[in-house]
Length: 507
Image (cartoon, rainbow, N blue to C red; front, side, top):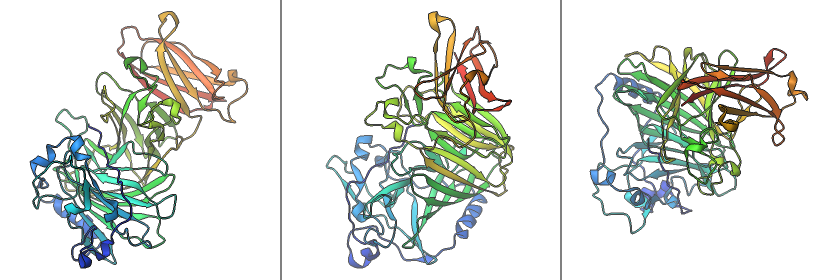
């Protein structure tokens, strides 16, 4: 899947949207208000699910045939942002132009005092260079997404913290981070031989916040041939940005391959597969591992892979405590990239609320030769899927931040894989973090290394002088095997000392 780019705004200050219609000043303009109740989004999703699916309208074809350079030559002028001349309102709203990867316009409305006012489409709120082509305009045009900004670090400076654009994709960042992985409203038939279905957020309602509010509310309506849904986002920006999400799902058909709280990321290479790429950078990835805190109390770290063939891993569970795609490589030297700044991209942690029952944290890894493609997908797949005609309500929290540890035990800092000395098999090195629980004498630590196949050594521990923590090293000979599942853990006094390290090796 091609990575979606989000266009940074260049200007500041704005005309007041509240006065736009009366004064004809530039700025986002609103239609007449109509009554609104958040429950109406749920009722609308329920009603849609009982009807045949109707595809969303499309913008003129010429708009979708432009190139990337054309699309980035048009951008929203933030002087036209909603609420930009209302300093007492702690939020500003921007919009994105249609075109390229975004062929479907969306509805955007503002909620205030129980009334909804839809945004009018106005091509004049955008700025563009002379490279932007002449394209036809008609009533099918509309905004393709929205961006939220607030005063996060300095008074009067509104920094973006969340973007909703394209299908049901959205992104967020903790303060000081840059955009990396994406989340989605729903995943349907991901990695299915019949092809994946991509639901769309058709409409958004943004509640106008009061002067001192720090949490911002967004409602969204999701639609697809197989399912409809109503979403409520409570977004609190900060160093760790949180999204408390409640969704009501209404399947139009029985859906077995359904993904709840899906995350989408990119992993090309690191020290597990560095030998496959001729690149000046030590590593290239948005995230480097899947962390799971399962219902049984285990903390599992699964380093990501860029396999030669698509692979799916399912981690069976009952009421997981949490899971997420994290970026544990946090130093500039881990990537040596002055432009992509991968070390500043946030991980995302999914924390289920209530009883999610039985299912599996599902990880999909797709081969890629380029960093421009998202090739990692992760989600919760409930046992039994969703049944036509039912309603499923789920709640969860997403945390976007640089946090790297949500479970228990020594965290895995890095995994390295390569040929052993004199080509005597393959060696695996796992660096664990240091902690007060690590004994001075590493021989007191029990090493547990298991594999599904091949010949595997028992492993040795040494203290890494740079991290202070233990390093586990073991060798294996795959023989004729093309796939081996590994499991390793450090234990002390018959109790877990570290996370469980899992890895799928492929020839």
